[in-house]
Image 1: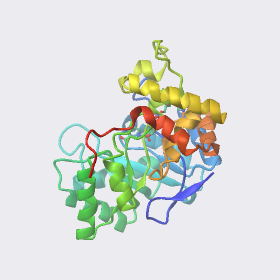
Image 2 (image 1 turned 45 degrees about the vertical axis):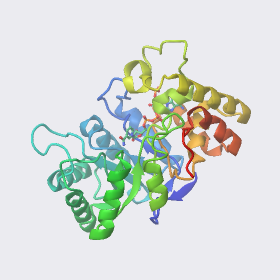
Image 3 (image 1 turned 30 degrees about the horizontal axis):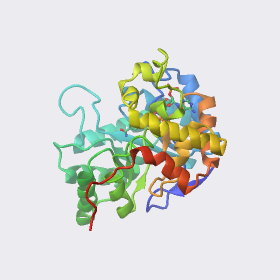
Image 4 (image 1 turned 180 degrees about the vertical axis):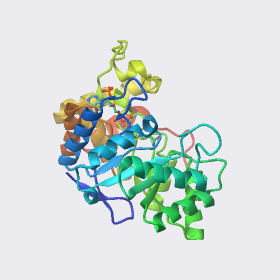
Length: 324
Ligand SMILES: NC(=O)c1ccc[n+]([C@@H]2O[C@H](COP(=O)([O-])OP(=O)(O)OC[C@H]3O[C@@H](n4cnc5c(N)ncnc54)[C@H](OP(=O)(O)O)[C@@H]3O)[C@@H](O)[C@H]2O)c1
């Protein structure tokens, strides 16, 4: 396993992070099998993955409980556990958002479910339009000062919002977000000129979510066939939203590079992300041992600059006016 620093921090994380959203029963495409989930987490950790990502809202706490069950039989100090706060956890006032109350209450609830005294990386899942960022940053600082959180991160917001948060921490002397979790893959490149530019300029780690576009980039779907009724694409609109002409062209490029380097489309799509200087560790979401072993194989694939460009070409943005 390769390890790298999480942005400008001293924390070592594996170059693949294990996404734990699948471990639960909230959606019919999830694993919905606690024993299988726990053994997959153990297999990933045994393979050297030390970085696990979950959220309080994943199956309303079930994912965190499963991660907690897996942690119980491992050396906690060797693992980097990340979770998130923002989404709705109960009806009525203060059931969601980034108020001081919700952030602190939810951190305590996550620690209970995870069965641990601290979270290594506590992330705000989205931006809260209704809470001043100073209040959220102060609440996160309190969690750090009281030993419940080690590092803080953020996910999926506009470049302006993230920049404002970073500069507010600098001015008010709060702990900075060390890490950003955006959607990013060979078919979802909208953050290249937005959040990713901020992360590169501010030395913030990038841990992309849905690096395989929910399975689209594995090559398991075909443009001329309806997805298998049991597949995630058949059950999830968000996966089917990747079925566009441009994206099929990217997948054709991924397949041709895979043939050239004797790897699978899954491995090449992940290798493409790993070749991006801004990327720290894609968050992979395997559901089986076989899928896990395949994604781990991406770490052995090296692409040439031409192959990286070939995959990017169908979606590289073009500008009508040159910048002079
Ligand atoms: N911050 C956020 O807002 C946010 C949003 C989404 C996700 N996340 C994080 O990112 C993680 C990963 O997201 P994701 O699940 O969408 O990632 P993904 O890697 O794009 O898609 C994973 C899905 O692809 C399929 N797959 C994975 N490996 C495969 C393989 N080797 N062969 C064939 N199919 C394979 C599996 O689905 P099937 O077998 O069912 O096809 C799997 O559930 C989540 O667990 C979560 O931690 C964060």
